[in-house]
Image (tube, rainbow, N blue to C red):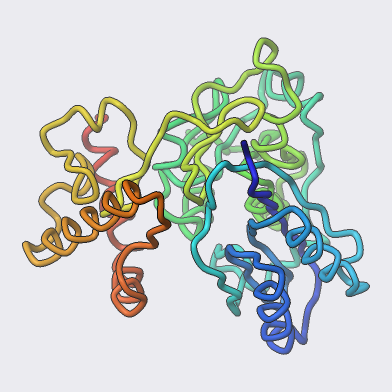
Length: 334
């Protein structure tokens, strides 16, 4: 039985006092036994939280008491196990990092297209369909006919657009573009960016892939594969049911049966995308952590991995490992 409510949310809105919002929000989430990650910036709020039904709804109500967030929209799903082990409320320059903090996203955003009209739009001749997610996300699922920019981080997107606008590129002469991402937030910013660059006909999937998979029946869908999500579920399918993917706990790349059948895969230690990139000391630490995870599973206990100090050190390396692993995955495919 699914007992953990998961709520994904974001809103672009001017929050000049965002730094003062952090501590009260963190305290309220803790009080409601809600975990996950929330990002606060001058340009708005973004995040995914999970916990007991009443607790998550109390946090959402708490956020909407701020008049600037009164119309905050969220997407719900359920998980059998806790998808998050900790609570984080972070202060950021951008709630989704493109490297263009001066972009007026709320004023420049493209035209929303609801899921029930999406298939018709992306089937039109001349429309360039762009997946704005990172390469490792695109690798496990995307829309039929979508262009993969092969970016390892969202901050690479402006450079990709500049390159594709050149003669012979996909975006030469500013064609109509339809853009999509997991929950909609990247598309808010990417469509605003495209409009700031002179593109007139810019559309994006309202509510993102998650809303499409929730509302569109599989037999009418133009989506192929799973949708990567940034929690312990790893991926979801139509109806937002948990998908078939796991993730490598050494590099956080999504992996399926093919990757787990290779000689480079060792549970909790390595996969084909990060094999050979860790030091012997790191591999030993990963094996010790995996042993603790398996022991906790046998005892029906929750295990959150290494101690917090070590997890903080690992996190600093995680972003670089993902970039390198994504590049290695692209090389393997080619």
